[in-house]
Image (tube, rainbow, N blue to C red; front, side, top):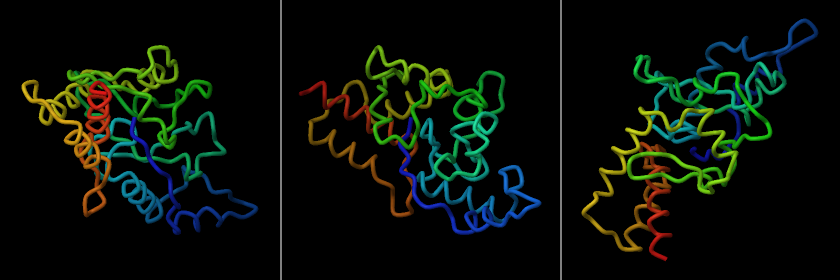
Length: 215
C-alpha cells in the first residue's frame, strides 16, 4: 500500500457540500462537474499521480475517486475528504482480474483495515524480487487481509513490481548502504512537477529491506 498524507479538500468541493437546504442534502451521487473534476484532480495531485493502493502511475482517464470506507456501509462518510482517495482502474482483460479499489468494491472489515492515510501503512508490507507482496510480520492479520481485499498479489501487479525491481536491482549487482539510502530517498520524493515515480514506494521499501539485511 502507498501512504497518502491527506491535506485540505478543494474549496469548490467544500462550497458545494454546504449548499443543501431543507429540501435537499448533498450526497456523492449528486456531485457533478466542475466540482467532481476538481476533486479528482486534487486527489491525484495529493497522491503524486499514483494509485493509493498499488502505487502505479495514474492519470485522470485511468483512475477513479475511491471511497476507502464504502458508501454502502458508511453513507455518512461519502463526502468526507479524509475518506476519499484516487485508485487505479483495472485493465479490462480476462487474464487480469480486478485489483485495488475495483476489487475492494463494497467489502470492508473495520476490525482489519489499514488505511492509506496511516503513516505506518507502507511498513506493514514487504516485497520479494519476483514482485510478491507479503506482510512484514508473518502474523499481521491486517496486512494479510488488505492484500486479499485489494488483490495486491495478483499476477498483473506482481509482474509490474517484478519489472520495476529487476530494472533497478539486477541480480548480479551489489549496492552499498549509502547507495541504497540514495535510492530510497529519491523514491520517497516527488519530481519537480509533484509526481511520484511509478511504484516508487515499492522500490523504496525494497531498498530499505536490503539495508536492513546488511545491518
